[in-house]
Length: 516
Image (tube, helix red, strand yellow):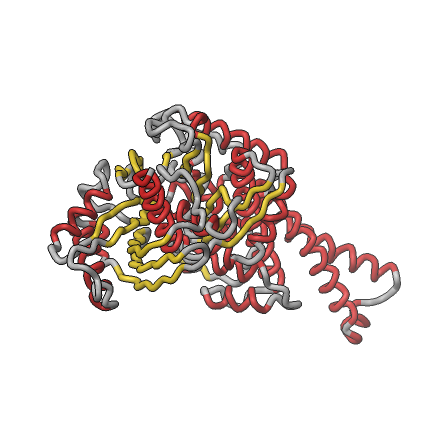
């Protein structure tokens, strides 16, 4: 018998004894109906107190203190310093800390016409961007679906398909009309996978993520592979001039408006960040060192933090269970705590734990003959609870929690009680809050490393754009962790506008160097 059941029985006995002392008989109570009502209300109140105490015990490991967040900051900073010294060996260090060969933001003098290919998921986008000076940027784009077979097949076929789509995009939009015969488009390649760059237009793929596993690409120069695919189509006149991580595009798009934007962050399906670092702090830097090249944007790949146990002090049993059942055990540990891809699964696993403790959903399940326990198809399917569910439930302010009830019903939990809805909302709030606070701690490290009186952080991604109270909680936590002035700004069109700006800055810099 559970502790809750024992307590309820004790409450019933206490109430009956009290009524007898008052000289009220059971028959009289039955006649007027007061006893049943009184007992029911007392039991329900007592039960809720117990349930919420037990739930609090389960959720407590997810509730991080500022002291723990500052320890996360210290560990992240240490890992960054160590990785800036090394050659980006992910077997030795948590973080890649890859130099991107982007040395400054736009100054408003950049102009030109550019193509952008943005590859980072099962779709990719081709954009045509025309830059006519500060804040005067026009773009058109089209999204192409990548057949599943290309995600898993030979890498050369994937790049040939991208080149084919580039040809279609140019033809459909008449981009070659009124162009000289020998006109060549400059193209920026937004590539959201870990790469070790050796120049702005040379980058070796370290590993595939996000469901890609094309052969013959890891360890090879992805810029060269795209260029070769383009060159195989004789009618295409395109030169790939820059490889851009999506975080760098986010930073550049924001810095075209805010000159003090020195940090770019992605908080969405995955998470990553980049920032301007002084080259003197990058021992592994092998590029140019002179008076005009004092900084370089570093792609941190911070989602990998924790691979060598520096986050073990805040990892819960739920985090470990999620990691062990994932496609990438002991990788992207930090990302698995805060990104949209995993938030729903963390909540689902907590709900499963509460059900198994007989705290949640009593009577709303049915017995499985094979498992011999309560079972629900939702609870058995990994990835069946989404970040959108977490956000919508977290923001449910209806008096009867009807929004939460509707969501739970839609995923197969029949007639959830008010207590069920209340508890699940608390779970969603707790998991979401932890994610936002960890993101704030990581951003705080980058703001401190930039070390300017005022810093703007450009951020993109579904968590920051759309997820409930995530932005509010992140902002509040960051203000406590960072004393200096900072500003969080939603960065628009980073993967297209921002990447085109990288190419434009590169062209402008070369033109200035040539003319002098």
